[in-house]
Image (cartoon, rainbow, N blue to C red; front, side, top):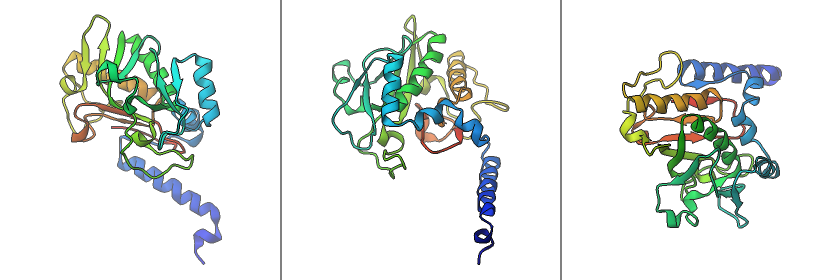
Length: 244
C-alpha cells in the first residue's frame, strides 16, 4: 500500500511542497497562506454564488443591465451601463454597436473586481478604460467546479489596451509599455520604465496587484501576445496570484 494512502496527511504535505516549489521556481507567482488568500477580494468575488454576486452589484448601485437569456460559458452575465467611480469601461468597437456586441458582456463577479479597480483608476485621473475584449464566445475552456468557463470564455477576464485621463491624454500599453519578456512588473527587482506614461501604467497595475483584486495580471513582460494589452482575471477555487 502506498505510504500516502496509509497516512492521508502526507498527501496534503506533498501538495503543499509542490506549491512551495512552484512558487520558488516562478518568482512571478505568489502563494500566500490559505487564510490570507481567502481574505483577498479576488478570492471573495470569484467564489460568490450567482445570487450574492448580483445582490452585491445592487447593494453598490453599480450601473448594470442583467442579461436574462443564457450566455454560453458565463454564469451571471451582465453589461455595464454607466461609469464606475467616474470611470467608463468600453471596448474599442464603435459606440453604436457596444450595447449589443457580445464582447461587452461580463460576469457579475468581474464587474465587482472592476469596480474596485476603477477606484484606483479614479485616483490617477483616469476616466475611461478601453479594452480589446472581455467575453470571447468562441474561446474554449474546461468548465470550472462552479459551472462557468474560465478566462474570456467565462467573462471573467479583461484585456486592457488603454486608459484615457481627464484632459484627453491616453496611457497606451502598446506605445507606453515597451515589451521586455521575463522582466518583473512589481516588487523587488521590478523593471524601471523610462517613460512617465509607462511608469504610471505599471504603478496602477501594481496597486491593483497589491490590493489582490485579480488572480492573474499578465503584461508585456509575459509574452509577445501581450505586447499591446494587460490581461486581468479572477479565478474561482484558487489561492494564488500571478503577476507577470
